Length: 451
Image 1 (cartoon, rainbow, N blue to C red):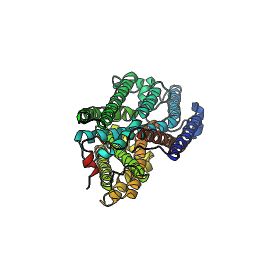
Image 2: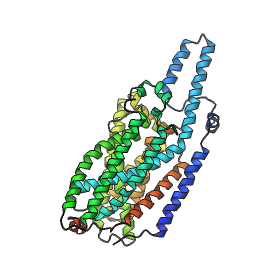
Image 3: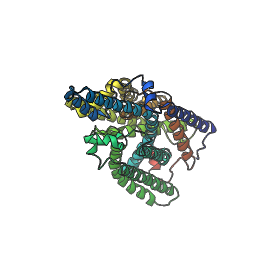
Image 4: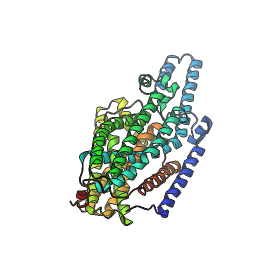
């Protein structure tokens, strides 16, 4: 049965994109154009310090001031330079706000598509018998991978061209005054950074292209050769993916705060990616069933998706706690600053996402009967999607905008724009082929699946 993209849903997606674009444009228009405007917007006149970009420079200034107290003129000169650095940093924080809102939303929806691709590859490599009836839904969601990935890489390229200051290591002045960042310049340099990004996206999209090609070819084949090809490339892709996903996490998120690192970070982002991807599979599957499609999907398939939503939520929480507990307990200044900043300046979103990403899924999805109920799956799914958007917000915003954060028009606009784009691309992709992968050798087992 072929899916038809209803005009009502298409118009809703376009409306989201238009409203979201207006919100993003408002964010860029309302950003300060110079340091004086930034000082007026922040209600400051050079007093205090809001960020750590010039931390090393500030420490040097403080030391200088101690040694030249007898020379008032030199001390005043240093203080002036000190305040100038702070004012410039404040300007960068406020101009970063619309860029950060754009980047958080762009990365989040790309992350959902990539997480779905990884989950799909796992099903293929494991030759799972329960999931083939969901393959077309997964392939539809991964249709967003290429356009979503291109948007993210364009934002990264614009950062490298100094249209924003999301990545402070891209600023030669910062590198010149920061010994730690200067020591990483062999890895953190714009050309190598963008080359890595392009290689990653090319690898992911190439796997998606060939896997879908073999999947569609299997529908019209009288043998399982295409299925075997899909199995082999999926197993190989998972090896490529686990390396590239970790490096992507370091590059695209962790390097926004280049003074900090965590060896668990790649796994942490992977857990967020997988739970968001599985949740989106469940939400779209339930929507399609409500419209009379996917008649071969039963409540046991929904139950299994609910189990993965529950399991990956617990896995995410385990990694969050492991990362937080070890860093907080060791109390090494270079590491613990990451969490202190978030606890002090992002208290509500930082602890709020724990409730959304762990407590709610735990309470709603622990019961086996609830996992068969579409209402509970949808309720938990919406909470998980919002919770992991806030998780990405927490990972990016503190280092990009400091304490000048707010979930306002640009942030909501960015979310709505990419939500609309995601819906438009995914559901249009679903119209291109039948919703049942009828040629898969496990399709009979999947249709009869009962748990």
